[in-house]
Amino acid sequence: MTSDKRLSRRALFKAAGAASVAAAASSLPLPGCAAPGGEPASSAARRRLTILQWSHFVPRYDRWFDETFTREWGARHGTEVVVDHMAASEINARGAGEAAAGQGHDLFLFVSPPAAYEDQVLDLSDVVSAVEARHGPAVALARRSNRNPRTGKWFAFSDSYVPDPGNYRIDLWAEAGFPNGPDSWEDLRAGGRRIKERTGCPVGIGLSQEVDSNMTLRALLWSFGGSEQDEQGRVILDSPATVEALKFMQALYLEAMTPEVFTWDPSSNNRLILSGRGSFIQNAISVTRAAEKENPELARKIGISRALAGPVRRLASAHLMNCWVIWKTGRNPDGARKFLVDLVDASASVFRESELYNLPCFPKTVPDAARILAEDPKGEPRGKYAVLGGALDWTANVGYPGFSSAAADQVFNTFLIPIMFARAARGDVSPQQAARDADREARRIFERRIKEKR
Image (cartoon, rainbow, N blue to C red):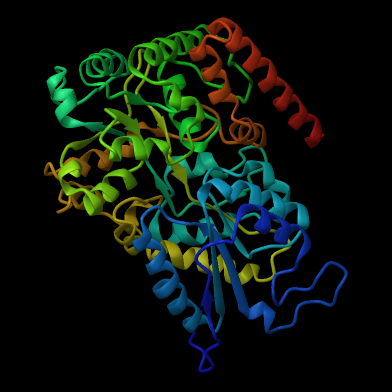
């Protein structure tokens, strides 16, 4: 339905800063919302939809979302749409602030499964059903990320996900005897050592308390057969497979890396390879998209690989998982639900405007995605993005091989896995001790979460 009366709209592109934003979440009501203990929101306020999402790494996407999609959606539904953006690294802190304050945005976009907030958010089963009736089933990755199999509740909803491939310097790896780049973790160690010895260019795998390290080190752990939990949600970190992964990381660090990885932030790996100093990083294609704009000659030297194979499997975590939630305290839950359904209808535009960064969680919405990736005109060497057409074959959820859960969410957001790998790589403790210590802390987290549910 289109309203004849169009309300004014605004879009805020950057939050002022993490501290001020967190304070605002805990102490100040959003414009048009009643303060705690105040009068109920007016009907005019309920015709307003507030959205918070991370600032996209491909700026073109935010321009489309803020200036085209939300404006057109608001005009169709007689709704003022307000979009706020924050750095992806600040999203979790802001989400915690909004949950604690009991007020915030109508729609909130996390970058990993927010299972810890299941009790604070609405069940989105009806949104999933409405979308699946139009577009067929969601991919298993979305289901395992956002649905609690014990309660049946969809605590979040994913319209798209971002895979986490390897990004490698074609020229350096060819000279080291790997013309197609590394295909396995052992290739990465052997070739990375040769490259570093000959050119000084290191492998860039983060060992820091930040999201990229969190994702990449899960890929290494899983590929060696380890995981933080089993399919039933029981902690199994202290295992021979985990110890082997830790031993490998220690060797990789000593042979092919540099100490800077212990203090990296989420963009450090990008900077390493875009500066021409790195031989390999694991990251989304925002790296190559940036190179295509800023340094086309370097872009042509960067290849894309599947997740690296380990002794047990080839697997990586989603680099980012678009996980939308609607707080129970939100002012416009009906509008928020409708917005999510319509956003999936626009999946082809999401895919295009993100420059193929966001892949659809409902594949039928972009049935020719594999062809578009393979034929991307900016992809040099020709067809470099084709590997992403099979990303679902090697992409798993936080909490693999189980479902995402409140406990797995806490393990993720306290950086337990990067801390474990960093301690072993630096030689602070033995790999066996690092695994035992991480397992003990994971058990404490899981047991506390179980008690909270009783």
